[in-house]
Image (cartoon, rainbow, N blue to C red; front, top):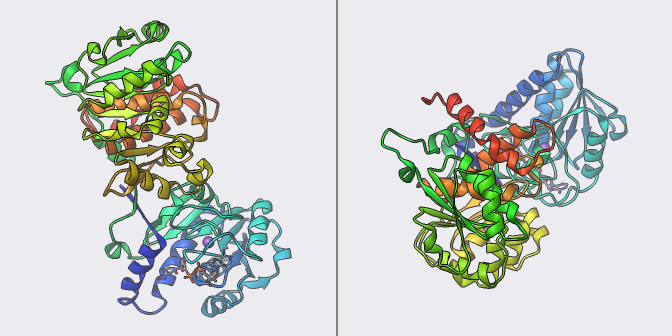
Length: 486
Ligand SMILES: NC(=O)C1=CN([C@@H]2O[C@H](COP(=O)(O)OP(=O)(O)OC[C@H]3O[C@@H](n4cnc5c(N)ncnc54)[C@H](O)[C@@H]3O)[C@@H](O)[C@H]2O)[C@@H](O)CC1
Ligand SMILES: [K+]
């Protein structure tokens, strides 16, 4: 499990550790780790040109000491001093190792730029001259490595209020900062390298976690000797309408390919036909006025993709949410519950899977604010709605009362295409029916969904059904990598 922390949490841990080690020791550990990563990234250290963008705080100090180490190994290291003050020890070390100070206009096109403008002390959008330097870095064509955090990214939330550095690699010290895992910050951070400075024992409970491939392999339900289709989990899918029959095919596809024991699908005529044609293994029921219980026994319901919001859909939603079975509430069902929030007042496990627009309707908040501050809003949704919330988007996050927010690290922008959300609902439904709690079902589903999309895309556009079809390959790969038996 990855853990990530707010800047306050990191500062407290650093204070505790600093009391135990000599002055300046942590900065040396950080600088050594940073220089080692840079040396790995450069084709060769000797003779390479490295520019340091140095802010006035300790982030600038780390950068200067790392620059000194690279200069000592033969790199041509030049520093732009952007702060109203400069870390004196760091600057002295750089000069002693042969580094020199340059003006912003002399940056040019170096091999590597180290962004040491701001670390966890940064607040709000970059002020000048930092903002200009962030632009110079972007235009230089150099490999940009952010020191601890890309400057301009809020290290606790991932918020970017204005200009920010866009790094290919971020070398972060002691602990992952929450803002490096959550967009828009995650996108600015690139690949995150964690340097151990001895902080781990001093860290509190994390505010943010992320599942790793091994965690997901461990959580995935696998049939045993005693399994039959009922014990593996029967998932009921209530989706599709005459207008949106495809959503039904996609949700059922996600459920089938994620490994359901059985999928029961119920919907209107056209949706039933299409589901049967694509997924003959699903058991289908034509649902007109009959009560939902006619569909048969299930262990969890997926409610909503493409089902519409008419009287019929409202009746089905009320009926399903009135049961004591676990339910995934998605798409049109979210519109229905946003008009009648009481439907979510239930004891049974409930996972809602909104995107920012849908969550905006549920909370009465502008979706842009949700995109900008995903963690804050997913927490607020949990608080107000008292259900487990999976907020979809460029970074999908899953939250539940009393647990850290789980951030998904496998997302890809190829997923931004119609219908992929329906597949996600189907996957989550299968996992819920197999007995996973909503928090695990949602976060494992998001992980698989992202990987399956990457596998299907391989750098090219995908259709939503491709994501469902790739799931078995991804699951096989995860289990093999975790050395699990076939
Ligand atoms: N505390 C520790 O034990 C360690 C800290 N380390 C480094 O220290 C960093 C934190 O250092 P600091 O607390 O000095 O903070 P920063 O180096 O992040 O800089 C804070 C300074 O930047 C200015 N500033 C804030 N927001 C700004 C904005 N939007 N535009 C322009 N200027 C802005 C503030 O006036 C403040 O003086 C970490 O990120 C890490 O790189 C490491 O050396 C490891 C050990
Ligand atoms: K930085």
